[in-house]
Length: 408
Image 1 (cartoon, rainbow, N blue to C red):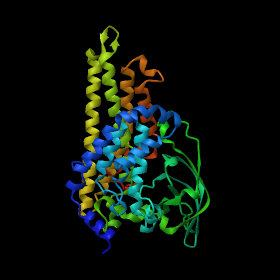
Image 2: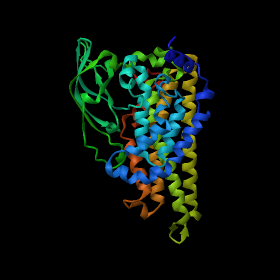
Image 3: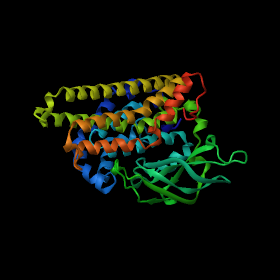
């Protein structure tokens, strides 16, 4: 057995105590995220103005080991429970949601690469295990099957953090004679930086610092081994030879990476709201003595705790099944997708209430509450956070109907 195979075998039997949220390494990672708070606060304006996360912040994330949390041990990764990754993302989002968003989206790609043929990871990381991958999963690419792979052309929007990355995941449907367009033939295509161009067009009202520009590809060849057909994963059961971390359904893992920033940002907004309440006058009454202001703080605090607890329980349920080598029930997975998708909705509603309660100063362009609110609002635009389809699917299943969500 090779050294890398031995390392993989050992990690496949790693206990939850060694890789979970209460492990020493997890606590060290969370401590590093907390310590970055003042640094990210000082960089936040530049992040928004420059429309990209500062290079220094990406370097800090590398140094802290954040990108290694979900990366395979074969390439120096920590192979930790996803709960650790989401907790770090939420901690970062308390201060800068744009930075947390980029960490969440790019960091989860280090997990997805393990679902590809092993040759893909070697191409990306053989010379530098710190190389990063951006994405745009919308099925807008035009695909032509050719010998050994595919030719890909198209333009994709919203590739967060792409300027920091040397590779990209892009979505497209492979046409067949029987089905020119069938989402069951959807694939993710992995391309190097030399095969695409970045079009600088990220001008938005929220998440300004994510640098989610367009990606353009003109007739690039993508070998078969650099594609991932999600439906073939069988909800993660295809990867029984890998650690439990990689036996999870793709969308369960990815979707929470784009909801965690909203929840962390709401926590940060509550902290700012409390600070405002300590000094603001609401008419003739100090805001800190206003029963309605107190009630709102308590309700937001309780809602955050409930969302955190629900998401943690959902994922622990998934991990328990993954450790046993079994798929979680379809109804449970539908419920978990719903619970993840509604986070952004709940956060933007609670943020709006705090914004209103903070009074007229909250509408100024330099208002920290307004900035956070716009970031959370922008997060709702991501398709994984558009909750209605997941709510309707769950309701239909409760009525005894079949799931219409193929990504479960």
